[in-house]
Image 1 (cartoon, helix red, strand yellow):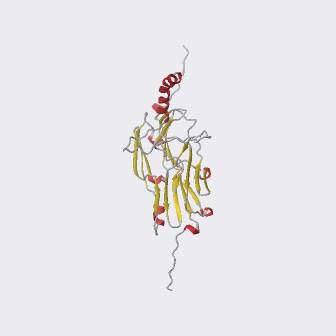
Image 2: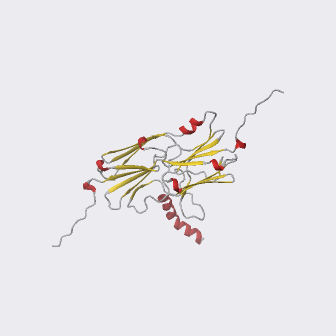
Image 3: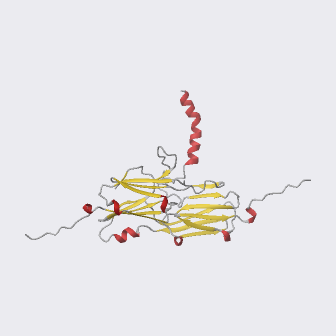
Length: 132
Length: 147
């Protein structure tokens, strides 16, 4: 599984301005685990509601996007401003064939959990050896 | 030549913009203060709001303490139980970018706050603490008297 966009994290190098769009984009941090049957992914997307998160899979590309409403645009004077609030975007290229219909996504406490099952052909198989 | 001079004149402005725009980053080898905080005064000037992004934590895992004019946010983040439990026949980590462990951050507030009326809520991984100022720190409108 490879990351195709910039290797940036929110805390290190906050702002990714995508061409065409005038919004501020952040790259969510992820954990990805692989089991014989599936990939398990967790992405930190604080502030995102389930309905504003978009997960898509197309020809080997998995794309995560989330729209975050500005939380304090009309507020008064800032005393600390250590992080920004904006959209989230990240894409991955998967070399392993995936059962796209079986992908499950769940948002909880600002964390997106993805279960991405491998297609039958990509799962490991044990071949019984018969004596001739 | 002209372009060069223009850039020279502009550069202090560009540097200023960098200072304003870019959040604090810890020097190499040091951890950045965690969690990162945004804090602002409400528009009516009666309270201070402090916000932190704490994805994956539940209310029970976060402690918010106010003592005098100091606010502390502490807790512990534990990750990835799920993946490990499922791994009876082998889990391989392809990426582990999310941090875990204990954290504490204390900030000094510019005013005394009314500790009894402090409210904290956690929504979608965002902690918001509202700290009303003590009466003596609240803005007061002074009535003008005609002589």
